[in-house]
Image (cartoon, rainbow, N blue to C red; front, side, top):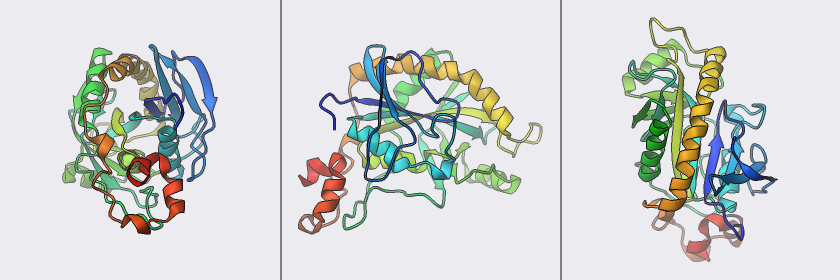
Amino acid sequence: MTENPIRIGVIGGSGLYEMEGLSDVEERRVATPFGDPSDAIVVGTLEGVRVAFVARHGRGHRIMPTEVNYRANVFALKRLGVEQVISISACGSLREHLHPGDVVVPDQLFDFTKKRAYTFFGDGLVVHVGTADPFCVHLSALLADAVQEAGGTVHQGGCFVTIEGPRFSTKGESFAYCAWGMDIIGMTTSPEAFLAREAEMCYAVMAHITDYDVWHETEAPVSVEAVIRVLQQNAALAQRALRLLVPRLAAAGRECECGDALATAILTQRDLIPEGVKEKLAPIVRKYLG
């Protein structure tokens, strides 16, 4: 952790590869035991608050969803001192009332991915973290308020299903997700949300609806062209919302239990945990394991 920790982090998804309005900008290459993050961490001042930003897919969108090093991205932010993470994500709608151009701040997550590294732990350290409510309730409420005040149409709550990608859904899959009760669909929120919880960071998603996936009978199936068009339209909304949200987070502090997620989650007998694992994960486990 740095001497002057940066408490707020932003992970930019498709369509948001950099943050406007930052001053005193510097780029930091943060080493992690899980490899390199998607790109350099951009640190700057937004509305008087130091913020860390990482482009999930790298600048220029070079990394597909399955290839994103989610552990390195989250760990790098943790190492900088980040406690609250705002994720910007593109998604498809699985409900008639959730329209392209709207924003959803989900409260539930369904993981339907298959090929990703889901945890920081293992190698002699067993941790079972609670994720009944995978998004921080307090941060999500503040985020939804900021999006609405910024002029967006925002829906609070909903279940976000994460698929592997990089292909879009078949109609059979899309109809199944609708039948299961899913509300929006994307490719990156899992395992990002779970890793943030393991790192005891608050995490919330500003999910921008770009399409109706492929289930809708009267709307065109999702395409890259449609996704990019809506994301470009919503980029300014995301920036406005962040400018409103960041100073409020800095002033309010944390009013949740995310910062103690590991307090009762570590199962391994302490004297049997390998020293190398404790050292490797020190930014996450130091306060519990010394």
